[in-house]
Amino acid sequence: MANDDDDDKKLSKLFEDAHAQGALSAKSLASLDIRDVGAQIQAGLGVTIDDIAASEVVLVTMMPDDSQSIAGAGNTDAVRDGHNFVLEALLGSKQSGEVLAHTRYLNGFVLTPYTALDHAVKMDRTNYHPNLGTPLFDQAVVVLGTVIAKSQELAQAGIAVRTVTLIITDGGDYGSTRCKAADVQALVADMLAQENHIVAAMGISDGTTDFKAVFRAMGIPDRWILTPGNSASEIRRAFAVFSQSAVRASQGIQLGGFSN
Image (cartoon, rainbow, N blue to C red):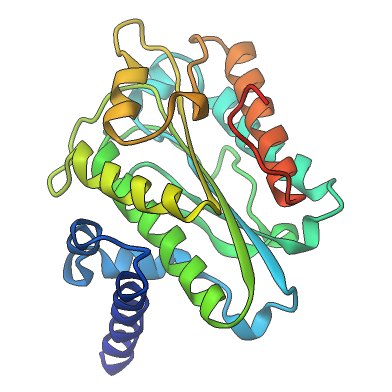
């Protein structure tokens, strides 16, 4: 138990330091209450500073939707393939050794805590069974909190860090109990103000949800929103667009959005 307490204290200090430096607002700090989300964030932090040899690191984070509607629409394979395509594209890039990858499903299951790309777990038929709900706001706060904590930890160790995060859903929020869109918006605003974070989102058409409106309310700029139709080819194409941006970000290229 003492170990858990130590981990909580370290995580609290990372967030408090970010707040003291002006990188995290009071509203964001409140939404990252360690009693509520600390264990979930800890589960994603992965490799320790001692395991990182690079002087610059890019955190590439994906949160694939594992709600029942993905399977119901026949999109399980497309989401799985798209996620794996992003990892493969990054592995093929010159900067692959500087990338740490993290994948957390929309309902909280951590497939891969932050790890070197060549250790990142691919999604397959044994580890991806979309059959749950869509706690979009709750889990967006957790995944962004994980990005913030890891980037703060790296920065404090003198490692330059950039981050690229993709949140994927095929519906609006359904099932969040802690957080609202405004809580996510506060975190995204803090991250974007630092100018070394990209927060992107993919809304896979369900025929009714206005994903631009959903993601705008979460603070995600239109230029970082993908809205593929509900077909395997469109979903895979959207992941390919994201992979191009992730690779370019890993190369230190300043990106203004997906259209660039």
